[in-house]
Image (tube, rainbow, N blue to C red; front, side, top):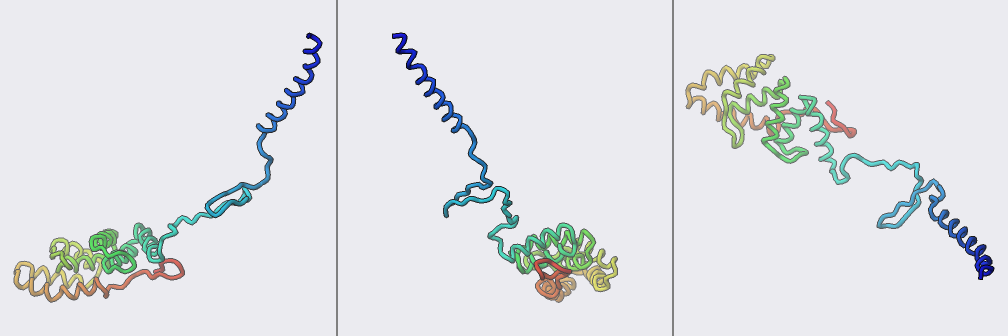
Length: 204
């Protein structure tokens, strides 16, 4: 009986060695090939590991007009001339969805930073009102005074005339009705843009 057990011992040892080799092979990492398997709905491919895939930061669904608008908004944060243009474009719906509130906010941003054209445009807007917004002489006086102080003669004359008439409601109403369509045309079409889009960028 003891002899039989001794004869089985080498067989057991051989089996244990084979199992150890198999376990070691399974635990070892796969050989380095320099490729990485990438799979998607269209299938699989082996891509070199050292290849860096470029990712465009802009939205793939962004239209050319949206790209232009986003670039102008970014500029307007730093440049009052761009903020002036953005205000006009919001008001006109030119290359961006029309929004009168945003138009006035960006125009005020430009005017607050010393842009003469924006100060003058706001002064005229508040002097007679625009669309559903009625006149606001205090705001008009503020912006026209700044524009006049910067040397704009038209703003100086408008401010003097409006100040003379503001206490006679009927005369001011008649005067305002005469100038209102003029100032509206300025906002709708007459005021020129400072920046133009070309070569994939805004240029002054």
